[in-house]
Length: 199
Image 1 (cartoon, one colour):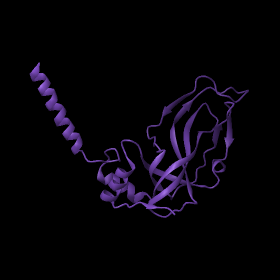
Image 2: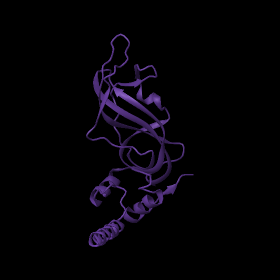
Image 3: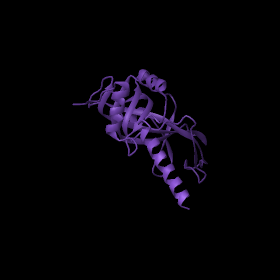
Image 4: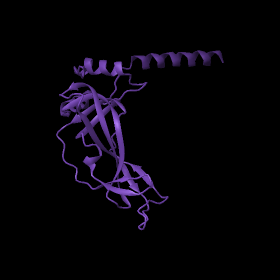
């Protein structure tokens, strides 16, 4: 029994030492080439947070795509130019939805279901946002869910009239795993991206 306890203690010490030696990487183990490519194709890299959000559905069919629409307010810039008067509207595909719509009321039935998209991109609530400002106009007909359960047609650009629609590449979420100071130090040391607070 004593030998087993000693062996377990040894394994725990070795494992803790191995974890402590693992370098901090907020990109979730993406390789350096991928990181440099992301930085290169991002025309704007900002620190900021989501200040508004909406859920949208494309078209008015019983099967379609479900989107998340949010507005990012920058607090600092790491690449490109921005200021405190600008906000950035980001639209990401969450997944496919299926549900029954009652033709007479326009409300959806109890069979509502969202299947996550294979290429789903998670937008952080606060953190670092990698943005490509060379975006294409979105021509899909969107519908927004109202409080009574109906889906009403909506003009995407009218939801946040003062925000600029941009293409979103990637985000790093600030949290207990990715503390702000650690993320900013990593980006400076590894990629020479210096955070510049906005006035």
